[in-house]
Length: 125
Image (cartoon, rainbow, N blue to C red; front, side, top):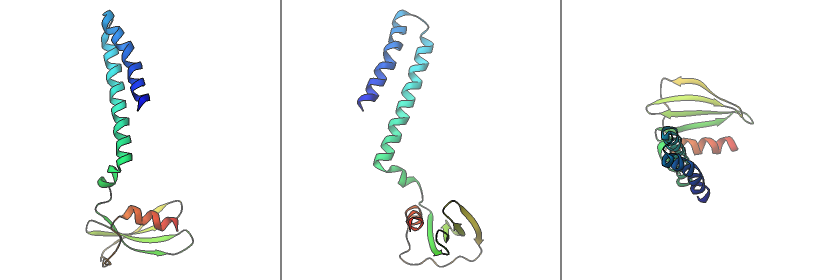
């Protein structure tokens, strides 16, 4: 946090000097505004990462219905997005859409609600 304040002070001091001298302050104010916006974006990203707020905005409507291991690093997943279900094939290097299911499978009771955690856990095994 101290280095952010130091960075702001380093940016603000030349800007303030140009404003006091009456030199074209337009460039200085644009540069200072840009610097402030970049710092605000960086602080917001850090806060999102530390407070895990990003998890609340992703994966709410995606559920894993079923999975099957078909090889050492290959798995097949049935994923429900909204009302539609998809059959996905996953390997260590890629994920492919195999089919869009016409007749949805029954969702098992106690099925994992968070697709991202379930999928990463299955890929680690």
